[in-house]
Each structure stands twice: as C-alpha cells, then as structure tokens.
Amino acid sequence: MSPRTGRRAGGADTRTAIAAAAREEFARSGYDAATIRAIARDAGVDPALVHHYFGTKERLFVAVMPFPAVPSEILAEVVAAGPDRWGEMIARIVVGLWENPQVSATMLALLRSATSSDTATKMLREFVTTAILGRLADALGVPDAAYRASLVASQIVGIGVARFVLGLEPLASVGGDDLVAAIAPTLQRYLTGDVRA
Image (tube, rainbow, N blue to C red; front, side, top):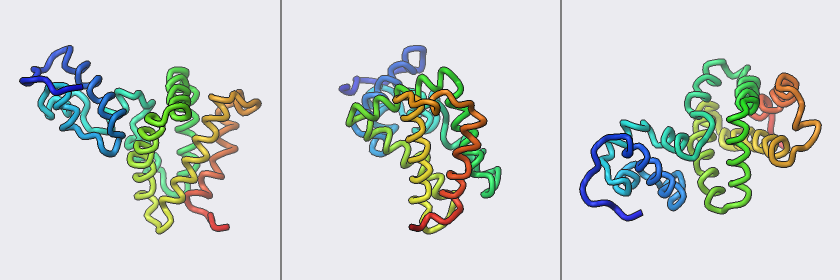
C-alpha cells in the first residue's frame, strides 16, 4: 500500500484503514520487522492513532490476524500460578480456548494458513517466537529456557494439528478435562523437569 498524502483524522474508517495496513505490513515484513511507524504511514495516520486504537504491536497483530488471545495476558496468569503449576495452567488455558467454538475456528484457520502459506508460516512463527516463547523463556529464567519453551510449543501445536486439522480420533473428541490431565504432566516436565536425552 503506498503512503497517503496528509494525515487521516480519527474516525470510524481510521481503525479499518489501520487494520488493513497492518495486515499488509505483517504479511510483507513479518511480525518482527513490522513497525507501528510503517503501519501508520501506510494507513495515512499518526503513529499515536495506531496506539490509541490498538495499543501495542502484539495487540494489533491479535486484532487483525486474528489470534484468539493476547499472549502476554495469558502468560501473566500462568506465571502468577507458580512454577509447580505452569504445565497445568498452560494446558488448562489452551484447552479452554480450544473449547470455545469461535476460538477453535480461528485456530483452525491459523493452523491451516501456517501449513499452506510460506508468508503465514513466517508471520505466525515470528509472532509465536517473540510474543509467546520469548516471554515464556524469560519467565523460566534458566539457561535452556528457549529449548524448553519450544518443546511446549511443539506439544501444543502438534495437538492442535491432530485435533483440528486432521480430526484424529479419539483425540479430536476427547473431553477438555481428560486432555488437560493427559498433557499437563508433559508440559510441566518440559518446563521444569529433566529434558536431556
């Protein structure tokens, strides 16, 4: 999208213009390289308006992609529960999100996009790495934190693909509490247990 001349004032169409510019910028540059300034320029607005309507770059990505939750808020809830409950909390939150029909539809769209489009794969990978895994690794505060966080992601993404994309039974129809009970110990081991070969 080429930059517009002049600046758009705030209004109903401003939010739409920012969202459209953000989708294009995220698709073109990826999550890491996309900037609020570039998005504002393409939307013909002051960067302050982007912050006004959407807040952070993370929230903007969530709003326009659409990601089903704001990772920083989820991770704050997980961290607050204490290290001994991290696996259970992550499992419970993720499975709870999956049980919401709107969220599961969004997750299905994201997973399908990521497996069929190089652009979507790059964008989702960068977002997950920066906004989720990086923050989770910071919370762990151990030397192999990035590896542990990526193991957690592999479990969650793998179950998401098996449950939603492949419809693998009985995983696709197992109840939420049973799924949490099955995966929480594995997530906990990835986070705080022995992960060496």
